[in-house]
Image 1 (spheres, rainbow over the protein chains, first blue to last red):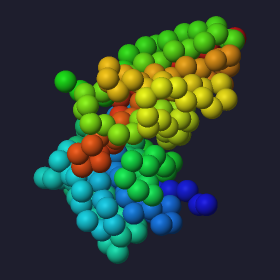
Image 2 (image 1 turned 90 degrees about the vertical axis):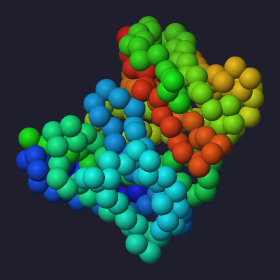
Image 3 (image 1 turned 45 degrees about the horizontal axis):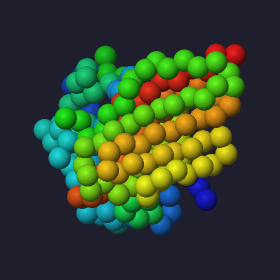
Image 4 (image 1 turned 180 degrees about the vertical axis):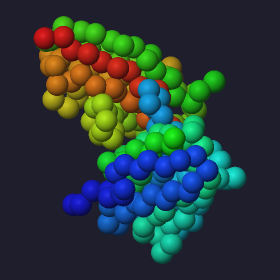
Length: 113
Length: 111
């Protein structure tokens, strides 16, 4: 089975610019997650989708971050405008059902200068 | 109080020894518990899942769960240098099914 696909792998932008990340989950996985992982820390949940509906976005900085999952498959996470503290790895994960383990993509390493 | 807590380490063990990693969680209704391994610069990789009290063994890895104490641990027997990584504890909570991760424990196995 193909894994979770993410792109791009790396992105360098200047502060106040915008950036978008793309994720394609494992086929058939209804639940999709976006995590932010800052160096030396554990992954922090940004948003969770069940099909194309949002289950939890309580930790998403909504003044600058947005995410969507049209048609319940692919998802896009956007940051606009970026801040220096947004430098992190953005991980997309999917699972087949509630309480099932998460499968992660390779992540996107974002550097904001 | 953080939802999931781990000792950040670093933890160093000699090759062939047993490495013991610990995790506590705050939501008593949590249902699912996972251990992930993360190599530097890589994404987390699932190594163990456990859903009921007791021990679960998979090769050199044993996960232990004690829901009454809200405690989950991972034992790595016959530790190898290739086990050197950060180990993340993840807990699926009862409400909303959020997955929360600990900060991870850095393990170094010394040859």
